Amino acid sequence: MWLYAKAAIIAVLSIALIVGGWKAATWRLEAQAAEVLRLELRAELERRVKADADRLSLQVKLSEAEARVGTGVRIVTKTIKQYVKDTPDCRITSPAVINGLRDLRAGNVPAAPAQPATGRAAP
Image (cartoon, rainbow, N blue to C red; front, side, top):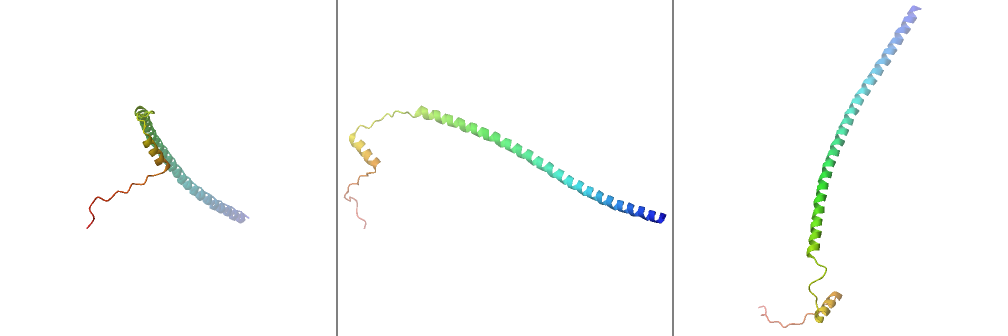
């Protein structure tokens, strides 16, 4: 009877050791996978921090460029208002010139008068 009990205890302990070893190996593999995931997470966080820093530096450069453009636009607008007047100084009063301009605006191009050739003929 002790022989059967001894064999059963040995079998149970053997099974327990096999299952325990299997579990320990599984835990070790999961720990390695967790370490890899932790390193990947750290690398991703570092990449995001660097991307945010780059974005902020580009935003500062863009703001400076916008400020320079805005100043340039104000200067050009001021210059245009200063030098360009709404009232022209010259008025055309000749009816012949006015009629000629109206014809040109309408698309009526006058035909060039025929002129006699005054130069030498080609040999």
